[in-house]
Length: 154
Image 1 (cartoon, rainbow, N blue to C red):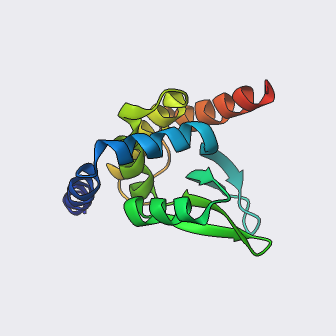
Image 2: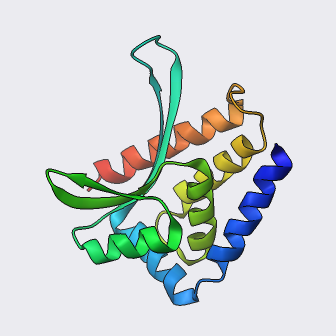
């Protein structure tokens, strides 16, 4: 299973990695300015077990930009109140691929991007449904903390 995941990552990275530098830099700038890298642990309502939530997204009113992101990087466009409002990745592989491609061009949210990349690498190297390691829990906690402190000072 692990070898299959590595093959998928390599194939996707080849496809995304061949994007022009200007596309990677533009996506990085959008993530830095209008985007978010999110991770949290929440209790499931049905059985109170802990679930990890993670996502990377860009909030934007311009549908053209969101469609461009979806076309280039995967993910999905989400609507609220009948309007398009954000592009988002919630799949570990999509998040990992997107962040590793745009990370070299980021300037502001490098800390949370690095933590999410580390988290994804660690989880993808484990069997499905294995408990989170101490380091994976630490990554999630740090991402949450950095986001809370970053936005509470605005």
